[in-house]
Image (cartoon, rainbow, N blue to C red; front, side, top):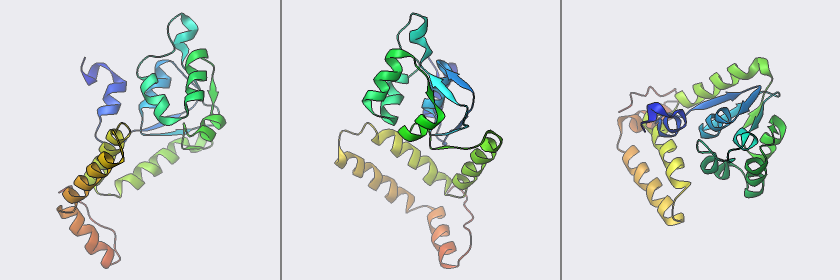
Length: 180
């Protein structure tokens, strides 16, 4: 199965960060799409559930048993996947499932502002940071995580973007990244 055939896989494999903006009901596959995103921002009316178990299937599908335990604690994961009960925006925020809750009218602006913040960083640094986050969540230990981070920092320290960023910092101006 190619990533193009599976949107959850496509999000996971996408080298750029994916920001999900959630409002209304996100059930089953919609829930999994939110879970697979790098950052989730919610409107107050967001409610999510693993609907599969409510229709005679198991509670785990489309990566929910992979993503959810990496985002929140085991007890909440079990509650959500074993019952199909909804989790609403405020509880999702309190559990760390979403990074913030904003008014519905501000949802798109919040997502765009976050994307703009990300775009102000080095493109290669952004991609490698996402890569490290995805790899190190499953790292066999602290030393392996450090080794990956060190390797990436050495690579990034050799780039034109790093040299530009340090010059820009010294000159008190925004850097002009060229993804090199």
